[in-house]
Image (cartoon, rainbow, N blue to C red; front, side, top):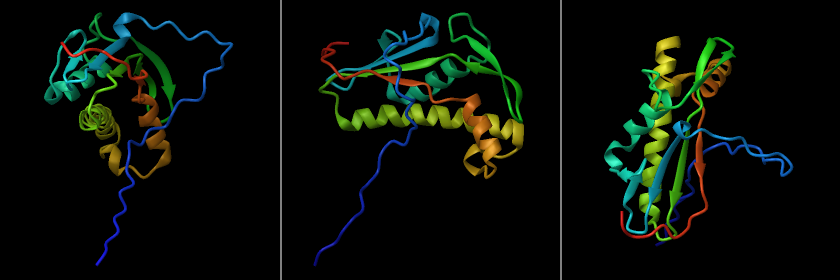
Length: 166
């Protein structure tokens, strides 16, 4: 007896377009970067301090939304978005770096928490503006508006040897 399982799965994200090599990358202010490091022992370093996977989602949400306009959290730029009007969009970028020895399990856990943070922010905005969770939206105009208002701003560096002690 034999069985066959379809195990194709992965992290679904739209990649940004390739950067023109002649174009200088934009400067990003320190307050707009949320740094996450994962070492070879699967230990987190979040914003320079020992982190915990159980609080990572909430930390990422707080960083990206900056609800109290804290000067230590990301700036916002106001942009007109169809069906939302003038809307403050976070300039925040989550910078994720893994050690070459980071386990795949930990890598996926971190990715899942970051994805949850973005999905929750999108759901909250969608419920506030349209009365329905983002995941239940069918109108592409509304979907595009929420995605523009809460972009996936995650930058992943090439894995390297970060070290074992944190």
